[in-house]
Structure formats: structure tokens, C-alpha cells
Length: 607
Image (tube, rainbow, N blue to C red; front, side):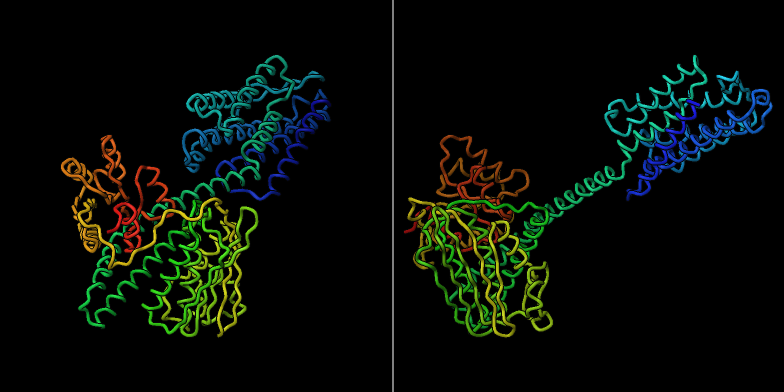
């Protein structure tokens, strides 16, 4: 009776486990499938064993030996236990050596069929003295042989994968091997104690709560999917970064030679217009490259906010100049108005590059979609303690936005009223990036628009006030016709011959003595034989990179020449990276003439 209650309790636990398992959403896997079969076979084994016990209790001892029903159920129990060992062995092989379930199933199914035939055909002996009942003989020996062989096989798997035993998948294997060995010893002395099936129940519980719990597996699968997505994003970002570099290199030549050609005074208006179109198209391509790169970094959560001290009014003035140049290039009859609050602190602390990018995107958007009337760029502020809230607005009399389309305005690659604005260039990334940047800087962006009349974009950003500083180092741009650096020697190092020509032609205007070098190794030789006032050094060069070249230069304690990183590796954060590597400054490609002037003025001093 005690045995019956023991088996009944195990049966109840097994049923509850299966109900919970099949009710939950599961991740499909080989281990998951094998676990389901193991749990079901164990349940069937418990039912057969419990039924056999009930039949034995109701059968008189005098009829016990001749009962064909007991004989049948006993053999059926042997077969189901052989099946359980077979399935668990397949599981052990799957987690240890191979993941070819089809081949493993065929091999072990063949062993199971042969063993089952032997268990049903060989003689079986029964013992019952009214207190103790068990079976023995050749049929029972088949199950014992399968059990011993299986356990030896599991031990081999464990030893073969000893370093991976910490893996949770091996917990059930370790548990059942230990407890089957213990139960085998117990049953040698007390054959009436039925432990194997109950141990199978405990094993399925351990499997459920360690490796096959649907919740745990879903979490694990989600973590794997997240890791894969992160790796994919990293690969995409790296690819786009490399592509950005490759695209910027020829763009440097196009934009550089374009700006040089524009300085010729004997050009016809038609030629000037063609050159202007080339520069404008290059600007658009550069904007697309930057936009795609920023979006990829935002999606990969790799876009960083890098704070430093800056002069806000200098940035606002630069943006005004850039906008006026764009409007002139597009020949649009638009009045450009601007106003900057006098109470804006002279020096702030924040990511001035991102502040500039946010405003530039809004101004560019206004210029694209405004064909007549005016554009107003306005910055006011609210100062409180050591923080200023910049309130930036860009208002225009452009095409406006329909009320039902405003929600789509900040979606990636979303361009509203495309069919009506086929001549307007762009990818629809600018505003999506702007919103993300504003959010990253804990700011807010608001859109007000009336279709056909115009739009107003307002951004609020909190920036820290840098006290006791009236201004930073002067970097105001001097007019092109007035800036010269007579007699100053500049070494330009770049592995790309066209880029060397671009840099050389851009520098000619400033009356400097230019020396060209096409490799880091050659540059090291040149600084040994000559003294330079400034070095423009490309970073991504074959053989020896610019950073490696700089390290070699600085091994000479007497080397004091300022070195500027001149590179197409222009993603956000690169300036800080190059400065920390020992460069004195950084100029991204394509080379901006105004940016170049600032650096020349800073390191050479104008005449």
C-alpha cells in the first residue's frame, strides 16, 4: 500500500509538471522536444507501474505466478523504461557531441526496438511472498543491461566534456547518474523498493527548473537574440563607418577642387554656376553620409554626447553664415532674419557639435521647403543659477505641414508630400536625427505648422554656464584676401595622391611652403632633414597609420611641431580620440576652407 501511495504521489507531480509545461509558450529546440518526450514517457511508466501494483494487490498469491496479466504489465513496464533510458541517452549525446537529431534517433531507436523484442520474448520470473514482490530473470536483465550501458555512456559524455560540466544542461545527467547508481545498490538489497521511475520524475523536475523552463528558455532566447542584434548593429555601424571614410575621401577631392575653382576670377557665370552645382551636390551627399552614420549609431545606442566648453554666439554666427551661403547658392528670394538674446552667457558647457547639428538640421529643412518669404532663426535663454535654458526656434513661410502628418515628421526616411516636392533633395533623416539628439540631451522639440503658410520648430536645451570666463581662445575667421603665412613650412602627409593635391592647392592661397609626403615612414625621414612649423597628418594610411607615425615622431624629445589629424574618419567622438592620442588638433575630410583657416591661424599666426 505504501508503494502505491509513493507512486501515486510521483504520478500527481508528473501530471502537474506536464500541464504547466504545455500551457506555457515555449521556444522550439531539440532539447525542448526531447524533454517533452522524456516527461511523457516517465508519466506513462508511472501509470504502468501503478497499474501493475494495483493488479498485484488484487491478485491472490496462489494465482500470482500464473497470471498472464501481471506478466504482460511487467514486460510493458520494462519496455517503457528501456524507452526512457534511450530518450535520455539521445539527450546526453545531443548536448555533448553532435546536433544531428535524425541520425541519433535512428541509431538509438534501433537499439530500443531490439531491446524491447528481447524484453517481451525472454522469460520473466516473479517473486511474491505477500509482503515483497518483484520480477527478475532474462527479460529483466535486458533492462538492467540497458541501464548499465546508458549510465556508462553518460559518464563517458561527462568526462569528455569535463570543462563544460558547469553548463546547466549537464545537471540532469549528473543527477540521474548519481541517483541511479545509489538506487541500484539499494535495490540489490531491497528489490521491492521501486525507485527508478520516481527518480525519472525527479529528473524531469530538475530538467524543467534548470534548462527547459519555458520562461527561462524564452529569456535565454531573447538574450541570444539581443546579442545577435547588438553584433549585427556593431557590424552595420563598422561597415557604415568604413563606407563613410571611403566616400569622404573622393568627396574631399570634389569639394576641395570645387572651392579652389570658385576662387578663379576669370570664370564665366555659366561655369561658376556649374561649379556651384557640383559643390552643392557634394554637400548633399556628405549630409546623407553623415545622416545614415548617425542613425546607425543611434540604433546601436552608440551615439555619445561629448561635453566641452564653447562659445554659443560663435556657433550661432557660423550657422548664420552657412545658411546665407546655402541660400545664395540656391538663388532663393528669401529674407534670412536672426536674433540672439544678449543675456546668453558667453561660455557654456555642453556638446556644441550636437547643438550645432540640431540647429543646422532645422535651418537646412527650412531652406529646402521655403521658396519665398522669410526664415527667422532666433535664440533666447532663461538663466537660473549655473544653468541656462536655450530656447532655439526656426520659423519659415514655407510649404507647411498638414496636421495629420505632423506625427510622422520625425520618422526615419519619411518625407512628407514627396509627390509635390520631387525637386527637394534629402533622405528624410535630418529631423529623425534631430529629435533623437534633442532627447539624448534631455531637451524638448515642438512643431507648430499651418499647411501652405509655414512652420515653426522650437527646441529647448539646458546647458551649464561656465562662470568667470568671458570668452575662449579667439578663433574668428579672417577674410581670405587678408590672411597669409609667408615663410611658414607645412608638411602634408597622405597616402592618397589626389588628397595631397587638394591640400596643397588649398594651402597655396596662404603663401606657405608646402612639402608633401605619401607615407608615415617617408614623413619620419623628412622631419629628420627639415624643420616644419605645422604637420597635417592623415591617419588611415597603409603600413604605418598617422597615430603610429605621431608616436614615432614624439620619441624624439626635441620634437615640438604641432600636428593636426587630417582624416576622413569623421564620426562623432573622433576629435576627442585624436586629441587623447597626442594630436594638437583635428580637421575632418572633406576639408572645410573656413575650418582650415582657423587651424592655420591658431598654429601659424596670420600676417
